[in-house]
Length: 367
Ligand code: SF4
Ligand code: SF4
Image 1 (cartoon, rainbow, N blue to C red):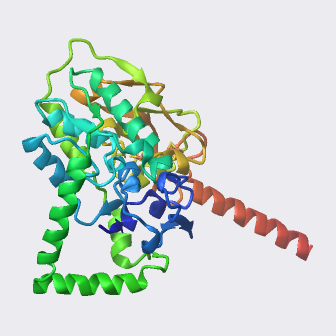
Image 2 (image 1 turned 180 degrees about the horizontal axis):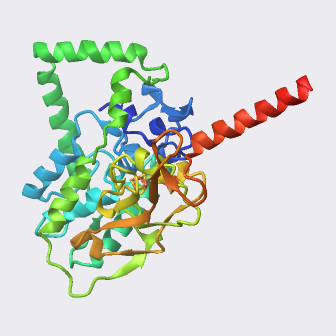
């Protein structure tokens, strides 16, 4: 398996002031680093554990040969125990949202084999993350459902034995096919480059993709399945710190200047506006809690609500967080956010101030 990184989905590609470093903190080999504000990694040092795949809020990382959405759909048919020794990469690849989605689509409880995790050589960063994901997913499930993610310690001597035997035989025969010879050649070429740090560039295509808003597939599937769940009689509210993949927000309008940055930069359009930029709207079900809007707000005007209302999963809201008075500038005729005083936009005001300053300098010099 090989790790892929989609630069245009990474929050760091949108803003130099993004503080996100979840992938760097989780990586057990410390191969992910930041250079020129974007992640780089060395393929030979990457063990394709998938820890970064499971923790990235915007799904910027993926593993070759492991498509999470396909896996989830297959799992709905089989409900096999999820085990890194049998059918999955490291269990940390499964985000909290993915674990809840697996649970929602299965009639029975899903089970994770964590028997091997505590003693695994990459346990230091990943085991706490796996436990945390299971605990948070179970906590969220408990607010509206009887489902529970179960943990099991499988006695795996027999599984390991058959796996090794059949896999080595299968690999041997499949490698004889011409298509696999080509794949081997590609893998060999990649191996040669593998010890160099992989850097990602902003080409025209990437820039266009950054501008395109997207909703990760796992979020689409999560909410599609949520629609089929029975609504609880009473909706619980939970502390926002207890849910890491979605948020409800508010804006302190005394601080907000309607600079437009947060809603222009939000990757999913959870934050958006109207055509005159007279409101800031918020659609909680689209929010990935990536904190990009917080990182870019110079005025510390946007905040996560202290409590998250589970009702949002069942009756999503589209809330207006701020409203502004939009006027036409007397000088240039463009729209601007009016906070009182002259009907002049900030750009015309600045130009006027600069012109006045220049005029005073000239007056002083030629007197
Ligand atoms: S909340 Fe902050 S970033 Fe968003 S429009 Fe207001 S001042 Fe700008
Ligand atoms: S609203 Fe903010 S935290 Fe939520 S997805 Fe948009 S930028 Fe990220």
